[in-house]
Amino acid sequence: MRMRAAVLEEFGEPLAVQEVELAEPRGGEVLVQLHACGVCHTDLYTASGADPSGYAPAVLGHEGAGVVEAVGPDVGSLAVGDHVVTLFSPQCRECVHCVDPRTNLCLAIREEQNKGHLPDGTTRISRDGEGIRHFMGCSTFAEYTVMPEIALAKVSPEAPFEHACLFACGLSTGLGAAINTAAVRPGTSCAVFGAGMVGLGAVAGCRLQGAERIICVDLSPQRLELARGQGATDLIEGGEWAVERILELTGGFGADYTFEATGNVAVMRQAVEAARMGWGLCTVAGVAGRGETLDVVPRLLITGRRIAGSSFGGVKGRDQVPVLVERYLAGEIDLEPFVSHRLGLDEVNRGFELMEAQDGIRSVIEFS
Ligand SMILES: NC(=O)c1ccc[n+]([C@@H]2O[C@H](COP(=O)([O-])OP(=O)(O)OC[C@H]3O[C@@H](n4cnc5c(N)ncnc54)[C@H](O)[C@@H]3O)[C@@H](O)[C@H]2O)c1
Ligand SMILES: [Zn+2]
Ligand SMILES: [Zn+2]
Image 1 (cartoon, rainbow, N blue to C red):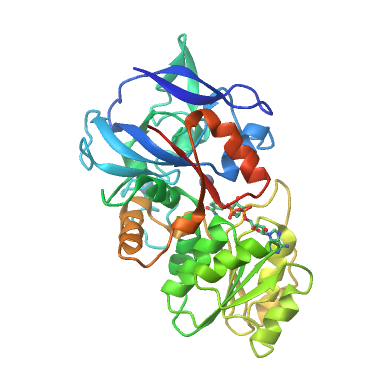
Image 2 (image 1 turned 120 degrees about the vertical axis):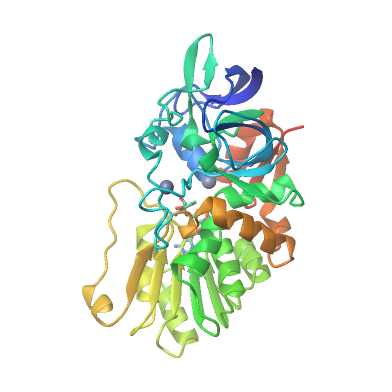
């Protein structure tokens, strides 16, 4: 079929929205009609050429929500008409990681996905016979996409697409960091560094877990106000004083749980230093620049602090994203403040500009 898609032709150039060809789903694959898709830093990072593992031409986008239009052979868990959220972090339910509750890092299709291929090593997207690669296994800056069944979470049809798509990346990452990775206990203190999509999700996750005190640190007063709306009890302007301020707010000890959602290694260090001695757990969700390292005084660890990393919030996507969406539908999470701009596919580059200007949390592309 023919469809419109935003293609990364050359690194550092704007995406080119154009007609491309999309082939039928093969075994284990599903054709999805996209209805909404968030614009994320990871798309921009790849488009800019800064990501050394990036590839072009490719259709970018990885925060999609839509409806199953057709299923290929051997697809058992999805049917035409199902509402789905795309998962850059799949869940095959069979590999050694999927059957273990300790991780969500499914091993089934990693290698081919990293190359921009579907699991059989080929692409479904093409133009004049030339293959166009699938970004993060998703390629959701497009009217349709073909994805592996194991990379789609079936969610309630009640959820509006523009909100459902937020669960495809940063929101689930932040929620999951608090709910899964840290497993925040009720009545505790938390400190979240960064109030973008991931940090705000972490604030909401800490609140859902029953944390008593949720301190949020960010450079932007507007974003700190959004954090208050998600349940933050104390707001701190980011800077070298942040650790000291957190210690003051927590009786000199530091927080029971800290979260890093900036991608800045100096802030990661602050998040470790702001964790309480004895049992403080620092969860790192931010993605640092290539080659950067985290500098931590080992004594902080010997005296009982721990550091954990969290990819997609430890969320096993097919099982847990639907549950998170249900919690949103039950009124436990307010997503409206996160959608700052609604754009058409042709305006995808404007989405990048808004993101670079830190204008709002998420621009969402809506497909008519
Ligand atoms: N682990 C995962 O699976 C996963 C998934 C999605 C995103 N990420 C990563 O998480 C990070 C956050 O993503 P996002 O979409 O929320 O980004 P974002 O840019 O929207 O938010 C980052 C926030 O950090 C704040 N910040 C910057 N410097 C600061 C400082 N010194 N002190 C306090 N706050 C500071 C910024 O003001 C901004 O609000 C990024 O590194 C991203 O790559 C990780
Ligand atoms: Zn993303
Ligand atoms: Zn797996």
